Each structure stands twice: as C-alpha cells, then as structure tokens.
Image (tube, rainbow, N blue to C red; front, side, top):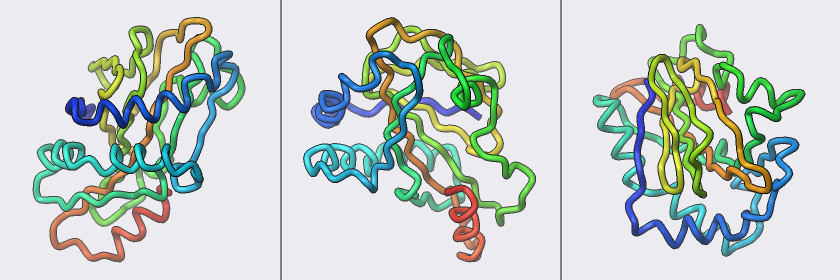
Amino acid sequence: MLIDGKLPNIYNSDINGCYMQLKDYNLKGENSIHYWINDIKDENLLFHLNKIRNAPEIKKNIQENYTNHEIISVHSSDEIYLSVSPKERKGSDIALSDCHYDAPFKYIYQGGNIFLRVILALNENDSVYTEVENKKSLISRSEYNIIDYNQDYHCVHGEIPKNKNRVLLKLHFIAKPIGSPQIWTDFCEYINN
C-alpha cells in the first residue's frame, strides 16, 4: 500500500533549513549518499531534522491507515538520502531504483508489527517517481510516501536533471498492534534496523 502525504506549511522553514545545508551535495549524482541522522553533529541541521521527523502529522497519517495500532518512531534507522538518478545508476545503486523490497524479511513473522518507511522530499522534483503496484507517486518538496518496508514491492523511475540533486529523508516507524507483546516490536525493530 502506498500512502501519500504532505507536511503543512509550518514546516517550510525546517525543510528549507535542511535543504540549504545539503543543496550542493551530490550534484554529479554518480552514487547515492546516505547520512544517518543520529550521527549528524551539526546542531542547526539536527534541529530542523528533528522537527520534521517528529512531526505529529506524519504519525497521524500513519495512524489513519493503521487503525488498532500504536505508531512508534524508529529514529535509529532514519537517514538523509541523496539519490542517484535512476537513469544513471550503477553498481549497488541499481538495486535502489530497480523494482525491489526495502528489506528481505517479507516472510519472517514479526508478531503483526509492520515496519514502515516514510520517504520525504526536501527539494523540488518533477521527474522521478515511485511506483507501488499500479499506483504512481511523484513527491516534491514537503511531500512524502509511506510504504511497508517488507511488503511493498516498489520501483523508482525517471531522471534527475544535470547539476541537480534529489534530497530525501527516510524516516521509519513501527505500526504495533494494540496488545502485541513488546518482544515482537523489539524483534521487528532489530531485524529491520
């Protein structure tokens, strides 16, 4: 299931604050680049990232689609992702843009817990889109997709224009069934992290 959303305008200064610090990174787009948010030392960047990844609107959107679940943030998995252009990908980046699952644990029982990935755009985009089943989603600044990390087979198509980049946040959550034993949630986080 592909869920779409958009952060309200009150987050514009935070999105701008993040993007302005990252706008000159990876302009050649030869490889994708990942930065774990929990490892970032720049306090100003971290301030903006934390406001975005703790936005209650994201959790509310997840909750509306996963009723009878508690929504838990998994900040240890969160990252800044500077995407390679799907058209120019090489090596291990092919797996990130060809059709794929984000994790190999589709058939491992996780106590009903669902590990979710939110992919949020920090800059404008009109040429790269994600496809899950028959649904296509092109996200641009402040828009996001939510996918089931283990169940949603998805593809990334398009091309990033020359001397441009595509800066995304990959944020993670667990939808924990109400009443589910904590050991299963811990297991879900452990194997997907």
